[in-house]
Length: 281
View 1 (tube, one colour):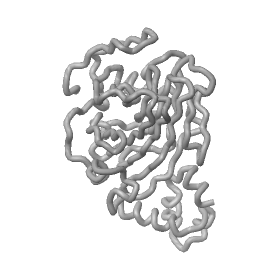
View 2 (cartoon, rainbow, N blue to C red):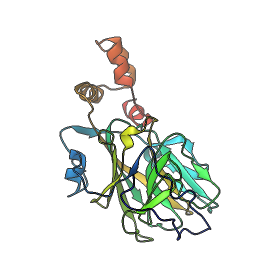
View 3 (cartoon, rainbow, N blue to C red):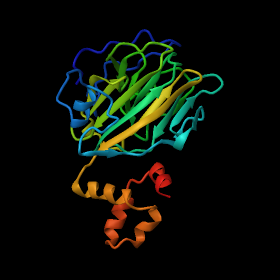
View 4 (cartoon, rainbow, N blue to C red):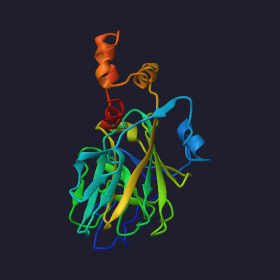
């Protein structure tokens, strides 16, 4: 349940109105307390984890999906990590989904917002494959229902059509970096702004059985978000061994010739994203 009462949002422009504002979420919920977090977040409170977060983490190369995005999102840059929203003008809200499936793991990623921070809603969060990626209206797209949740640049956290003032609004027209820590073990999502931990925003996420993905959205014209940094914790000794092996092979095509079992070869190739494939090929 919510930690404190939810009110109907009044300051969204373009006449957007929250429906069923008293409906309680069933899969996840807002969480307001600063709780004990994973090794990832504990070290991140002092600085962004550019030099590693713990001995149990590694690079987690993924990027935005070219197949799962609005027509109003253009991807460019290295591996398509930069998303440019509404290149000409905006008539609605656009989104792009990340390739990474988050469930069950501990993942951290950072998004750099360009100086064009303004408009009805720029959002960063997670959602299932059912999350809408385009709507011809200026809305808070993440958190409009139980399929997604997210934080807007106005400091408002959304889930299931209801909202909470989670942090102070971002300064408009000022570049900033947003970090997201998804802990699939504890079922929490924590946000960071320019290296400062803002606390846990949502919990109960480990009860969601559908695949969850990173998602970003914007209603403002010519806005840009770039995926800077992606890390994850190892989930098992087997997972750690896979990471070491992949670091010591030249290409994915060499996996079939490795002197290991067929089952192990299949495990090596699991969850290999297009970024990983491009790096090894």
